[in-house]
Length: 518
Image: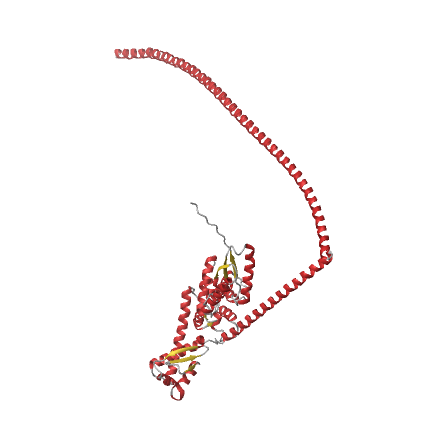
């Protein structure tokens, strides 16, 4: 036990002595390490500061160099701009100097012109004085030679002019009177023709009769029947007169209504084919013929609308269009005329950029009143307007129908086009009742009148006789003579020919010089 205690005590004493020593040694070591680190930190700090100072000095020098370079560059740019401004100012100065020189030159020229004009004015004044003196001398000489004073001469000249004016006025009055008479005659003829048309009474055989061919002459007796019963029944049912004369194998149907004539023709042809001709059979065939004509009228109206390309027309108007197939105007078929006007109106509207469909519709319906004008009171224009309003046509179409003969003012371009197309269709050579022989004869007369004048080489009637072109011999007719020749030709045409409208006389004089290079 004592040994153990001694060991423990010795260990404790050792510990008590070694621990403070160890702590002191450790503390000194740490102190040295810290001091060494602090010394290194101060050196690094000094190095960093030195490097920062060096870097700042470098940056400062670089900034100074850049500033100097920018200053030099700005100075160079400024010098360059100054030079350019000076050069531009010099150019402006030179221009101003040139303008001043030009102005001075122009001023000198104007002064010279003024001087020249002044001298000319003086010369003209002297010439005027001389002319006045010469005129006075001339008047004195004329008075001496004529034995009249100037006042007496003036009175004499005025009397001559007055007589000439009176003559020209009388001629003009005569021309106006004759023109008025011609217009009155023309209007009277139009009124008469319109009245005849309204009752479907064209006084020509082509539009008042129909001829039915017979297989033999024995059929005439069967058509007449016992005591004329068959022919009376047929005439009563159709309202058409049957003319049975000596014409071989033919019966003539006479009547002013073309629809009635067509019904009678169809019925008679059916009876001839059937062979059973008696009153009851006649009545049956007439009824069938009436139905066929009604179907034909409807089909013709529909065909007209399809041909023109107009759709949506009221069925009653379509039927009336079909009736116009059996209507004539001045010998021209009314339906064909309406189709032609519709097509012309469409072409004109297309050229002008207007509505082609509306133009065709207005052209097709412009004469629709002619289908009923022999059944109802009023002109075909009034009746056409009433029909179009009744069947809800557009105001454009109604105005075109109303104005196509100039009864009212056209309100749209389409109305003007329909009016023009109507005139074109009616004025076409051969469209209306004017034979080809008459037409060519008028053209020949026009050329013959022109060729009889002296100096005329050739003449050509063109534009359907509305213009005559005259080729003259250049050696015989001068440019001055052309005026008199054209007037003489026009006067001769006015005296010898009858024509609608006016005829243009175009005189042509041509001189050619030909040479050859050899």
